[in-house]
Length: 210
Image (cartoon, rainbow, N blue to C red; front, side, top):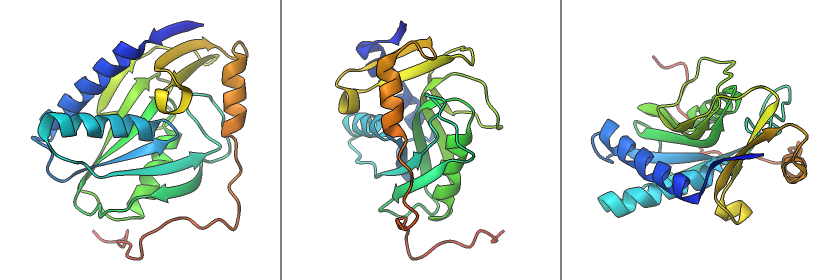
């Protein structure tokens, strides 16, 4: 097991990504943030808080919960399952910053983008990730990357955040070598109940519009 990022490293990354978002978009106007649970949403909250401190602007934050597929732990199902969506604001013509902890194959991000588009038509969707570990299966790239980390397919990138794990760190280890990660992985596998409704707005933009 190897520690890739410590608490101070993660703090610096959050600050840097915040400044990159502000610079790329020439301010914070029309920016909203949506995090992919269960750690991407906390990264999004930290970036939003940093924007508030830096620019004095409160950014709307939403979340999408995708189960049975986590890029960081390689729990691959036939397709990602959308467990629930919490987007309590208008995203039409907005700059949506989609945030996740680890970018791997791109399948989780694609599922999140498709879910977001059911809620409206953003002006643009930009992707921010704490770790980009490579091995893409889809043509998806992040606009903001905390750290690019070359990995092999038999390695696991394990992100710990204080909000969930009580500590901030990113670790790299071989599959099957970390019992804590295996236990955490099992706890993430929760089948979506077939009768569980998804949270949606009543007004949905027609996808067939030009």
